[in-house]
Each structure stands twice: as structure tokens, then as C-alpha cells.
Image (tube, rainbow, N blue to C red; front, side, top):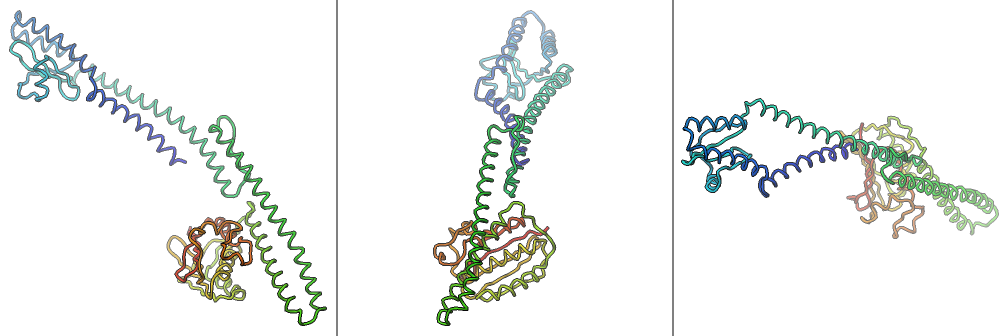
Length: 421
């Protein structure tokens, strides 16, 4: 949130500063500089008086009057040769007696012999120094007041948005009961009310979804158990010719039980109250143990490759479940081989699980992690399409990342990335 607040705050101050610079440029170069014209007219009156007095006073008196004018106007006046005057100003002085340029010097000509002078502010004059100090103090006060008002307003907005950000982050972590304060001093328009309304609807929807998932799993589990009993009783009464059909029926019941177990796992992972039991684990030992168990269930051969010993802080039960789901998925959609590779760098540990099947279409890379999604060409495979959704939930709980890509072996490649502390 500070990244939003600071650029906005300093951006406004810079905009104000740029505004005054552009205003000065427009006033000085593109439009008539009114202040310069007024200054030139005021000093022209003094030049006219000097020209009128020229016939009645001596040259010393003329110089004395010029110094008096310089003193009263808090400027320094010094004679200058016409050739030393910039050409564009020399052209201006041909038609007028005074030229005021606020960038450098001011110029004027006086007396019948057209003597040229330039003048500039007397920096040693106490009144000029005092005026500069006052101007600086006024400018600093203006900047300070604008900065203070902007800071108060933006900080108040920053504080309100921070409350909204905190609530959104909590909701994203699974705390669906999180709500934004709705006091008038903490609201940002109708945003707080709309966010709370959305959170309530989301909480009700997910709660209903979980209840439905659990209800289906519970309701299906009981009939499956009874079917196992009936099959066991039938196996003792029917002849051997019917045993093959009975065995096929029993296999289908086992498939349904796996699907129900998948539903239970997904419902468990969806619960916001699930907490990780983190502890140090050795990746090579965990994978070796899981591969040994999974090899008995898989038709494909599992190849495990670990370059160097790796230690990771994780929940070994949930991590094993994620590995199992990915391996079972690779066995289901692959051909003959499953490849598990562990890569360790100074920043992270990557666990790659690949198969040599037909892979996954690029447009389905994101969708495969959604609940109940199954590719059309694999619609005949058993399962609810929850295995990868469970893996995704486990990865998110570990603050890790999962990436799907094409494998060099021809199938899909899932890469789990765990950042090292």
C-alpha cells in the first residue's frame, strides 16, 4: 500500500511545482509579460524626467540623479556601450527608452546623446535581502501547507485502503469471515459495503459448496460399504462362471471408493481452519518412501533423481498427498514412465513430476487446477477431477508455487517450487 501512497503523494507535489514553472514560461515567453511592461512604464517616467532636466543640470548632476534613482529603486545602474547590448534588445531600444528583462539585466537609454545603461538588483541592499528572505519563507510556507494538507488527506485515504487491503488478503488466505469496518471515518465511498456484501455471498456459496461435497461423500460411502457386504455374500453362493463378473463389479466399487475419498480430501483442503504442521523433512527420504509405496499402485515405472540432499520445512503428510496425487495423475494419463526430479538452488527447491503421455493442451493449463475439470479426451477416466485441485490447495498453504508445462518426455510436467527461508 505504501507503494501506492508515496508515488501519489510526491507525484502531486511534483505536479504543483511543474505547474508553477509552466505558468512562468507561458507568462514570460508565450504571452505578454504584464509585470515587465508595468516595470518598464514606471521607469520610463523617470527617464522622461531626466531628459527634461538635461538642459538645466550639469553632467555631474545627471550622474548624481542616476545614482539617486538607483538608490531609491534598490538597483545598481552602470553605463554600457551600445555594442555590448544583445542585438535583440538593441533593436527594442531603438523604438523605446526602456527594456525590462527579468531573466538577466534591464536596459535603458537616456539624454539626447543616447547614453546606454544597464541595471540589476542590488543584492547588498538590506531591503532586497529582507524581501528575498520573505519570498523564500512565503514559498516554503506555501509548499509546507500544501504538502501537509496533501499528506493528511492521502494518509487518511492510505489508512482506509490499508484496512481494505488487509481484509482482502485475509479473505484470500481463507478467512472468509473477515470484514472491512464500515464506520464513516473508515469508509471509501461504498467500497467497504460492497466488499463486505461480496465476502458474505462468497462465504455462503463456499459453505454451501463444502456441505454439498461432504454430504455427497457421506451419502455415497454408506451404500458402497453395503455393496461390499452383498458382494462378499454373493461370492459364497454363485458358481465360478459368475465370479469373473462379480470381480469386475467389485473393481468398479473400489473405483467409486477412490472417488469418494477424493471428495473427502478436497472438502478437507477447502476448510479455512486447516493448519499446517510444519517440521524439517529430508526430501530424498520422503520421496523415496512415497515412490516405494506408489510403485505398487502404478502401472508405470517411477524414476527418481535427486542431485543433492535437500531439507525443507513443510507438512510431510500434506506434501506426501500432493506428490501422490501428481504421481497417480501421471500414471493415469502417461504411458510407461514417470520421472521425479529434485533440483536445489540457493533460493528454492523444485520438485518436478513428468510423464511420457500425450500431455495437456496449452489452453487448459490453468483450468486443470479447477475443481471437477477434466479434459474431453480423458472423460472416460475415473475420478471427479479433484486431484490437481487438492495439490493446488496444498501448494498455496505452503506459500509455494506450482507450474504446468510440456515435458521433454512428451507428456505433462508439474513443477513444485518451494522458496528457502
